[in-house]
Image 1 (cartoon, rainbow, N blue to C red):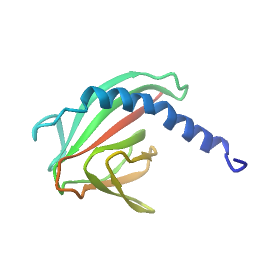
Image 2 (cartoon, helix red, strand yellow):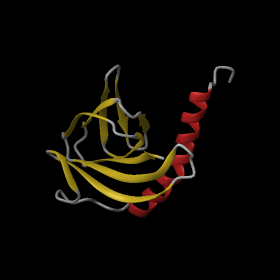
Image 3 (cartoon, rainbow, N blue to C red):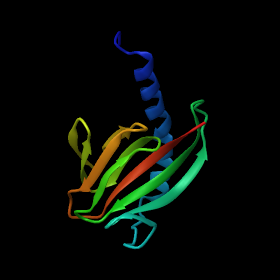
Length: 140
């Protein structure tokens, strides 16, 4: 615990604060199966569906938006610069995530974070429709 600095504590706190949003949003839509044309197209086979939004009690953020990014099997969301800090959870499928300095694989139930200004690419590597549930932290 000696190596826990302010930045690590803040990241841990933000992740913990987002967990209730995932629990509520996941239970509200857990049985939802998205159609191939639902939401807004981001890339071929990749669509963004707005789930909900609410005010934030975290001083650095005025609100939190929950969205699902729905990937058809094999679909890729090309490398994109993140406009906001985000906490992401895989609610369906399996993905390969590429960041500038690393690449990793995730499956249903796994979480990861994206920092504002960083670049991420995601690919659905499963043979089912994959879903990223994302808590977008909107700055104050």
